[in-house]
Amino acid sequence: MLHTLHIQNLALIERAEVRLAEGLTVISGETGGGKSLLITALKLLRGEKAPGSLVRHEKDELQVDGEFRLGKGARSATIAGMVQSLCGGSIDDDLLLVTRIVDRQGKSRVRIGGKPATLAALRELGAFLLEIHGQGDSRALMRPEIQCETLDAFAGTTKLRLEFAAALQAARTLRQRLEDSSRGDRERRQRLEFLRFQHAAMTELALGEGELAELEQEHQLLGNLDEMRQQLDEALSVLQDGEDNAADRLARAARAVQQAAAIDRRLEDASEQMAQIEELVAGVCRSLQSGQARLELDPSRLQAVQERLDEIHSALKRFGPTEADLRRNLASTAAELAAAEGETADPETLAAELRAATDVAAAAGRKLVRARRKAAEPFAERIRSELQDLGMQRTEVRVAMADEFAADRLLDDATEHGPVPVDLEVRINPGEPFHSMRDTASGGELARIVLAVKKTLADQDRVPLLVLDEIDAEIGGRLGLLVGKKLHEVARHHQVVIVTHLAPVAAFAQHHFLVGKQTAGAGRSERTLSGVRQLRGDEVERELAAMAMGDGTDAAALQQARRLVAKAKELG
Figure 1 (cartoon, helix red, strand yellow):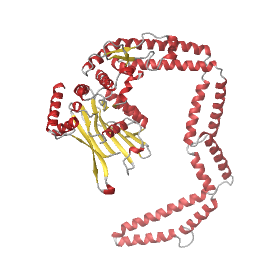
Figure 2 (spheres, helix red, strand yellow):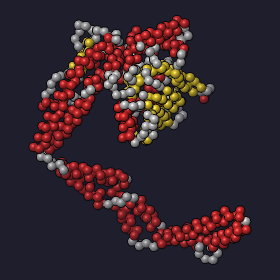
Figure 3 (cartoon, one colour):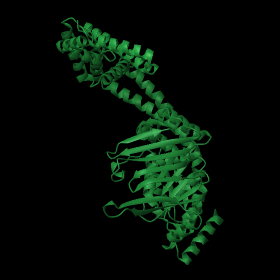
Figure 4 (cartoon, rainbow, N blue to C red):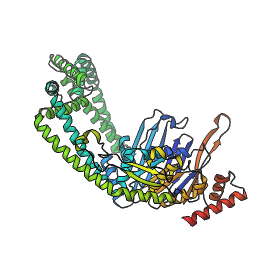
């Protein structure tokens, strides 16, 4: 679950800390007050895109930190394993810290478990940490692939779907290889020849690690030999050549201080420092003499270095532009060359392999279809039962899915989600035929269906935090208590956070946060801020009254709010 959310410089929110707990959390507030910014912060933790315009005015970057408490169990172990594999991060005291920073250019920095990570890694992990549904996102359930995943989550057939997808991809890869082979191997031979040429060019270069930097340093030295000799000669002349040089003077001074220290022990530190200075100067002289010795080079060395640099720079223009790029290109070229040279299968062999792979995919597909068919009726019945509690007592649900498929059409017709489409069909009005949910469900009906599905999947769903952004907007107050009750039930298995305008829904909250705007400063320095605070005691009733009647102080509205809370406790 999400334990604490820290937000800094996100649009109107300058700084906010929200401490969450298990159960149902409601977020309310006036339109435009900043409720959506909390959802935006959670989306940032899930790895979604973020424009630089989200950064607060006159600030350089925004930052969102999420502290997730994992606890024990298989789900937490899976997340911990992902953190380790994605970035080497760690989890301390069952707390996982996820940080997202976005600057004004829209560039992101990510830290997971105290380690830098990529945005792609955050997206992969975020899918396991939290799920966000908005008003428009609810319609994702209408997509056939989402309906497949939903049925599999209920039936426990996700592993079968992944096995089928892998088998299907393997068969399609073999078919592509066979088609490539059937078109002739002229292109393959040309590619192979090109790869060999590139590999030979990079291999023959034999570029050593750090060689370019060393050669450039040497080239700079060789090109300035006369000036180097002049400067080193002058330095050594001052330091140690001739009478009364710096080294001799320092030696005399060191002896004098030493003798003085023998008389006044307070000068012993100065005596030691003089001795160190004398040794440092001697070391400098030795280094300068070594530098002089290095200047005695073969005159032809400059030309040899220049030729080698030209050779390396020419190769980097083709395979670089950096040494690291060249080495990566060499590795990838070698791998592709090895794969191309190992491609010896003839069309007959490939055709036999394709038939076998297609049979494997077909067998996996039939197994998946049988398992889905077995679960389809119980799944539909559970959803129908939940819908009865949401005011759709006469709605019927069924899963439309073909029992068989043509194996010879499998590679053309199937998707990674299954060999045959899955479609949730509903009959909302008695006497009418069943229709696909995407063709019949209104906004309010769809919102209730989503809640019914979430309740049905409560035990199977892998995501611990469910965030709902005003998905009840199209339901209306009349069904609010029913929706609130269902959310309360879902919150027994998930941590649920919902942004809502409906007082009957908010009445079921175990934790209630209010988001609002205020202004600070005056004149040109006046700024608008959004703040977040948790409501306590009577504050909850006043907010419910304001949500229901528009006035949190009206006696009748407060009485209605108390009745809502009492009713919610009765139903919950």
